[in-house]
Amino acid sequence: MKHLLKLLDVSEKEILEILNLADQLKYERKHGIPHRHLEGKSLGMIFQKASTRTRLSFETGMYQLGGQALFLSNRDLQIGRGEPVQDTARVMSRYLDGIMIRTFAQQEVEDLAKYGTIPVINGLTDFCHPCQILADLMTVREKKGSFAGLKACFIGDGNNMANSLIVGCLKVGMKFSIACPDGYRPDSRVLDFAKDYGDKFTLTDNVPEAAADADVVITDVWASMGQEDEKAKREAAFKGYQVNDGVMKAARGDAMVLHCLPAHREEEITAKVFEEHADEIFEEAENRLHAQKAVMVKLMKD
Image (cartoon, rainbow, N blue to C red):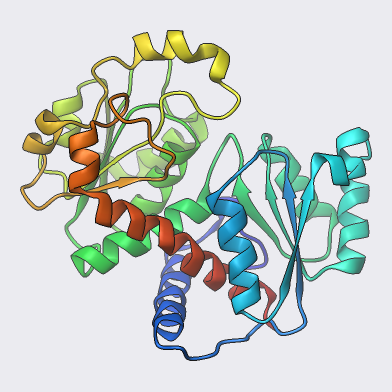
């Protein structure tokens, strides 16, 4: 495993190796055990999209691992003023030991990896969000003990989160169902991937059907970053696609709830359900740190 570009590229074995390492790093962090695996290493962090959790978790993670993280925005890079990605990749490869990029187009991430000579980590694109899903899977395994026999469901937009959740959950052996309105379905590449899993995957526009007997209920905002001008249209399309008491009644009694944050209470999730499951949601947010540290160690350690 040289890069983390999308979970479609990663095997079940590699996912589990990352999760096991993340568990170990979390234990060491909680018990004050040093784990400076990346002493003297530098990570360049390219942000074409703003972020709270991604910047904090990568920057803090590199510090805890003994390295340094460099924050690079559009204003700091020639890439924002027309320099080709392939040239940026070659230059950064001469200075740094790894690149994390949070941007719009998946192709930009793929090109950085193609033309550079150092590991590239996808911090989010419009197509997928692999780091978040690794944190989600880590949280599920912490709370449920294993993935065996579990069903996860996603309610809402078939966006980058949905794309990565489908791939990640199916690869580790979970059943997965998604409820989304027509016109907001997951990417066709992901749906083609899911066909190989037969009845372990369900796509529907029926929310109670998707949530039935789910062990994990997941949602995300209706309008992602860059879609603000579609807010009214999306609110109309997603009316009824809310994680509320009715959805939780359809799920298993001990079902957990995940949300990648930020959450818009009373839109995709009620304030009541959010607060009832806040411990799980904020453990998920913390696990971004541990899961990404594991990714960086796996990719960047000598």
